[in-house]
Image (cartoon, rainbow, N blue to C red; front, top):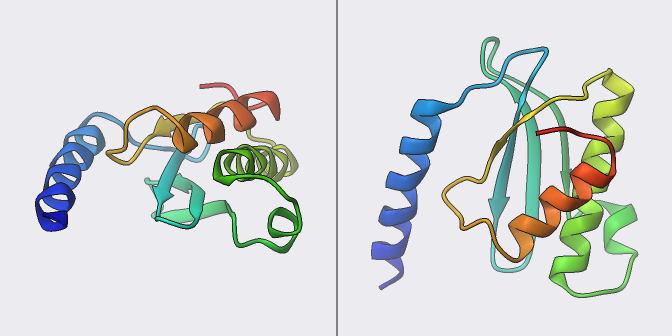
Length: 118
């Protein structure tokens, strides 16, 4: 059962990746969601480099209380802070094959509130 879901998500992910790519000026905000945690990265696909990352396993996020959606919003805000330090304002959002709903949406909202535009 879960293998079918994983294959389906992988196909969706590949179709998304055909259409979008990040550059140094406008990196790709990539999201990975596990059952317990959420991870986000700013990726420059031209140089194959991760510029900044944040996850719900970071000490400052883990110290906060709340459900997984609340923590996702904090992860988005943390990533936006790191992007601001690097002088990045615009990003391309890559939902990674997940529906734009729940934790993925919370992360995006947190990033937008932190100052990122996509």
